[in-house]
Length: 543
Image 1 (cartoon, rainbow, N blue to C red):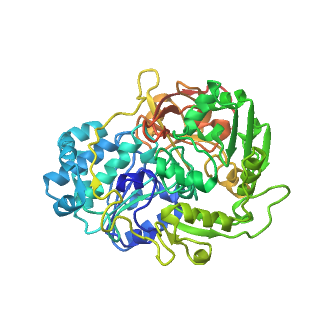
Image 2 (cartoon, rainbow, N blue to C red):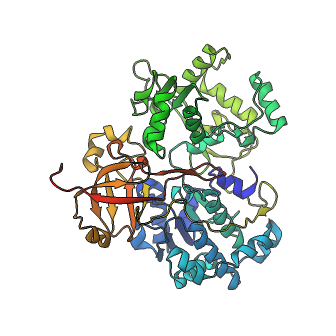
Image 3 (cartoon, rainbow, N blue to C red):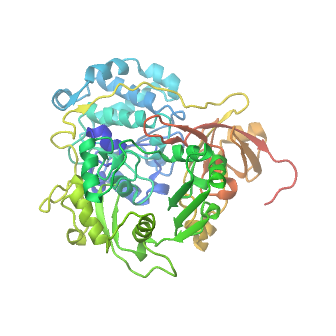
């Protein structure tokens, strides 16, 4: 990793979640923690009870909105402009930390040149947020003794996702709110072990520990450890894999614990790839919609049926201990991968997850001091460089990984697809409290089905009145990729011109509509903005 931006890019939280309760100010942007990260939401409630200021920037109202000291509703895809406007005010009012900037950072001059283009008056025109609110956001955040930035996929799932994250890094460095207690940046990961999967090389450009595959000395280290020749070039991202299938370049695919038929943008494109590929194997604990396309389905083990580790969103490595045996022919995934590798002629001979953890510690500097025996308690924060080290709760205390933190000059760019006469609404997608991700696990739960088991589209009352749509009516929702049928929920949670859909429901797939355009660096899809139109379904329909 290369300093703050790299650690943010990998999703690494700079501080512990416990510190959220003790901070003086929480700036929540692009995150809905009560529905997506309820344990984090509990800490935000506790911080508010202690007197912390709560700032929310989100195009959609959320459950925490009534508690906010200030809520702004920026237009979809305008986060960079909003953040640049806040930083303009901070510089104009001399609320920045000049000593921190001088001692701990570089490239401030180039950054400042860009920020000077974003006075609140201009930003108000771009974002729809009043100038006085931009100024108040800047004041609350910059003038609080400690402050934390909390964000999630509402920041990352854009064509400017990397720019959004870099802008948050700029804001933290500008005010010196990084590298000390009760401050920092809190990216909330979408699933329980996303951080661990990234840490362990579940990315096409890194070996475990974010060690680049293009560095010869790193590659040689892993070649020696694994006794195999490794490619010198980076691999393909998920989006590139499916495009390569449709181009005939990939003939076989293994999908483990993913359901891209529901979760990936323009999912008809995904279905085409899965029908086209000569051989597909899926490893999963349930028969997902993606697994139905497979030639072979291999049953994996659920979390309670295996040993191992999870690394959570705050970098805490935790021991996972098997409670029950896997049912039927199901096996832990490490065993399935090992058996597949042996069938392909590459010999793996691990006897247990403990042996795998020992190899991780040998090859991954951030995990070097972590062992099964040390994980008997509450877990250890990486980096943990040796067996005596207690783990690192706060990153960047003395310096950034690269030495000095680098300011980035980030210009605002609009979303890739904006409303027009044919598609006059902007669709944004997300999760709801009663279902999780693609519904593979939660939608088989009778109690959760009773809560919510049908898709809906939220629409502002003014838009509903204009379209003569009533509460609960069925509508067709169309984008340039396709159309879905769903029920209307009239709500003030979305502003005029914006509609919201959860993506959990296969029968009304939001991701049939979403735009398959990607951030050019991280290759993250723009799930959060695309242009759509609504069409009322006339005549009788299912209730």
